[in-house]
Image (tube, rainbow, N blue to C red; front, side):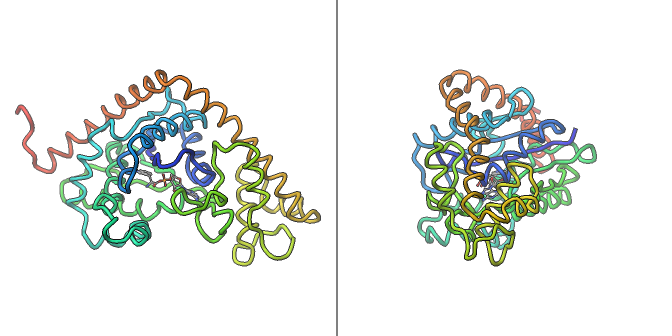
Length: 339
Ligand code: TYM
């Protein structure tokens, strides 16, 4: 079966609507047709300053949310990145194949480092995309046997391109080893924007709390945020990326969650204006996230069960990663241990 790998950072107390529509929903549906590997990337989470206890808690909350959304630990391999040390090891090898200039062109790095300033920017933040490439390529199928797909939002496209480049470069230098991965980016929901600044991406690090819909948010505040979402001049519910970025974002969210096409939504709300549209949207969002919030709470009540799930995930992921690394070490020219 074709393989899937994806990852998410445990850098907030809750995932948000952008994560859900851009990526996590696809994680769940791809389980039916693919051999799936899903990773909570705690190594990536320390590329900016962090609090250790917070990271530990958020890693567990992340795992619980993924299961609550429908990631099935019996079918998918669900694990924490730091449990499989091969991620860091392959990142070193790939880092030695990455040009300094090539890494300098990563737009996420440029954005984040310009906010942090030179002294606050770590080397880890610079090599972040190389670690991401290692994450993916460790789970390569044997070349020629199957595809490797990576469900992500639009903002990860450049990192995926770098991963493809590194896979091809490694193959060219050392022999056919990696399958070049394909980004699997959803049509209408690849970039969910900030409710308050509809030209900017909804983002854990950049958005204000009012701009983000958290998966684990309580119904009251969630309704309020949606009612207060920035809409545009006029009162017509119409899709227009340029002139009506706010309404357009809400239409995309509604359509993605509810399955009604944007055209049908425009027709449905042609007479009613923004108020009724937002009220109904709030119910659609709550209908999706309330059961997820309740299941997450229940899962967090049984930390021993979560640990068992992660142990099993680490074992399965570790076995695949170990096999890939053995091949990589050999191809690169390291002397085999005990030979
Ligand atoms: P992260 O943790 O920032 O986000 C997780 C996923 O959510 C998507 N996403 C969005 N999609 C649509 N609209 C938005 N506003 C929005 N915000 C976030 C992201 O595209 C992502 O798919 N570098 C990755 C984590 C990572 C990874 C990997 C991903 C590490 N290794 C290997 C895939 C494969 C990141 O920061 O995602």
